[in-house]
Image 1 (tube, helix red, strand yellow):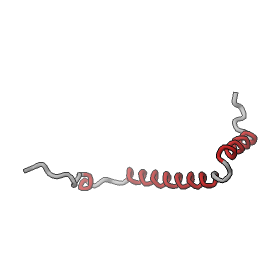
Image 2: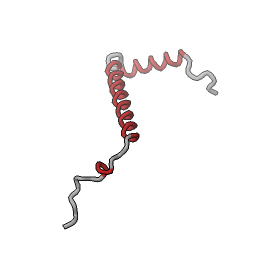
Image 3: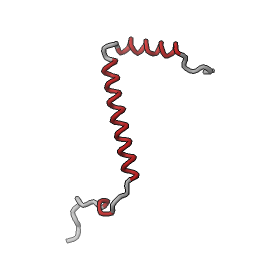
Image 4: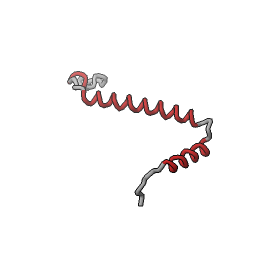
Length: 71
């Protein structure tokens, strides 16, 4: 069925369709926005990975913002 996958002329057709649909003026802006989003996603994923690997203090794990119910 799909023996060759994507050939160079397939990519050329896809590029032409994208240029026709979005227009040449909006493509740089879209690429810039995509790049910013990817950088944010990468930094957030790294922060989450660092948070998961860090040990948790028992003092910081208890919520100190809740009022005590003992009267």
